[in-house]
Image (cartoon, rainbow, N blue to C red):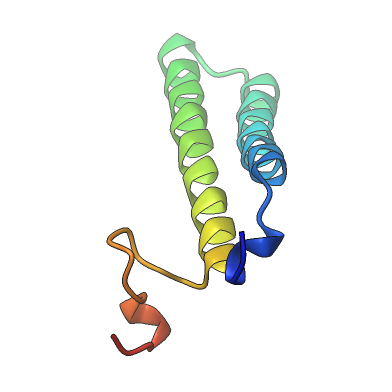
Length: 86
């Protein structure tokens, strides 16, 4: 593989995205332990933690992939936000 993607590692991507998700889930667990909410509020905090973990995984993996492959969009063209011309 040549070009901009030489520094890309699936292992590093997996560890970083899972680490971000773990941090969000740990925060949600600490909130539940400290606040000791009632059943419904505890469930809402846990569901927000799961949604936050999924979002964190998406953000981290998207940023790492765009950084490794030069900011291309999903269709393979230049990222319009990066200011590159087609």
